[in-house]
Amino acid sequence: MSARGNFSSRLGFILAAAGSAVGLGNIWKFPFEVADGGGAAFVLIYLIFAFVLCFPVMVTEVAIGRKTEKNPIGAFNSLGFSRWNIIGKLGILCGVLILSFYNVVAGWAFGYFIEMILGNFEVGNSFGDFTSNVIKVGSYAVVFMLSTSYIVSKGVSGGIEKLAKILMPTLIIMILSLVIYSFTLENAMEGVKYYLVPDLSKLTNVNTIGGALRQAFFSLSLGMGALITYGSYLSKKENIVTSAAMITLFDVGIAFIAGLMMFPLVAYNLGGEMSNVQGGPGLIFVTLPGVFETLGPILGIVVGAFFFLLLSFAALTSTVSLLEVPVSYVVDEYKVKRKRAVAIMAIIIFIIGLPSLAGNGYSAFFTNAFNLPGGSSDFMTLVGYITDVLLMLGGFLIVTFAAYVWKKENLEAEIAQGYEGYKDSIIRKLLNFCITYLCPVVLALLFIMVVLNNFFGINLLG
Ligand code: TRP
Image 1 (cartoon, rainbow, N blue to C red):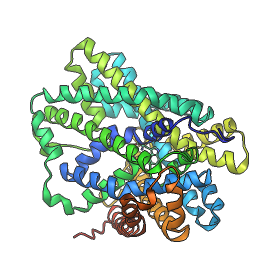
Image 2: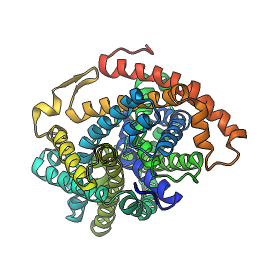
Image 3: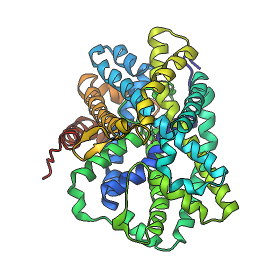
């Protein structure tokens, strides 16, 4: 074990990275992005992007991290290209911004755990009142930031690994059980159709394509160096390609079954009228409590509370990875003690998150003062859009850097460590093609398309 700390095993790394990937992005964000993006067409494009565009970025991030054993800024310095450390700087900024609002939503999930214990199934119908109560949701957000800080202060192998190990399997079983239950409800099949049978005309829609890519990056924790940081704790003996493949499959798989659980429930609530689907950040918080209520008072409380508890834990392994990035930077580069770095960062991030906390009903200004082409938006949605495009930009810059500046031969050599026979494999040819041509070109084009569409209302696809 090096002085920086290492994952104790390959499984440890995979679990921690999967723990970072699997979170609110899969269970809270994915279903509402599907609803906003038009259903099954979105799902189809999302799946393609995750494997063709995101997986190569993931391999590249992990390889850069493992090669340098550094945080996302230090990594570029140590490869000798300190000008490119702007990627790391953007990444850290982006991580700070994401955590600032993510922590608020995680607080909601935790708050719902409490509401479920109290048997308050009505909370779904008064979600707006719930989020406007800043004292309450603010306290939950404090609890969440403290829990995250506690785990990060223990270091990677101590805290993160252990948590992920128990949590993931339980969460999957829970969601699968709910999938089965949701299928027994009236109109369930309308939901499944909406989720799985694509409306082909939507395949060329800017919001569908752009949303799918934004979601894929966010869900896989890519584009801001989180996986450079986790890769920096990975042993040279491990196979980066198979590890990344497992993380991708795992994350995409969980999002997929979360959707399979949600849409039958939504269809049940809407009486099968899927044209009335409303997306937006309230989707799971509005839909689920009523469904738990149908299970009867006792089972409803047990299942509901357990569900939101697991969701909170899934969020926790993600907030941990988000906080780890700026903390590892401060620890590595300024030689600050880990505990102190955690405290400083947590306080700064919490403060940056206050407008997101207030912008869900409490403060009229932060709730709708921001003009986007799609209509007026709240602060949290705006920050989410900004960080989403920063992730795409980061992903583009990372592959471009690896292919053309660091050079693909060096990247290959790093990937080949722990992967016997990589040099002669088809995988190598495919990955090279993606990293040198496909990803840089397609990511650049999609980045431009999304920025023009989401911030300037210019639709390149007509
Ligand atoms: N992927 C996590 C989720 O789906 C969120 C997350 C954690 C993240 N770390 C990240 C997103 C780094 C982008 C970058 O909930």
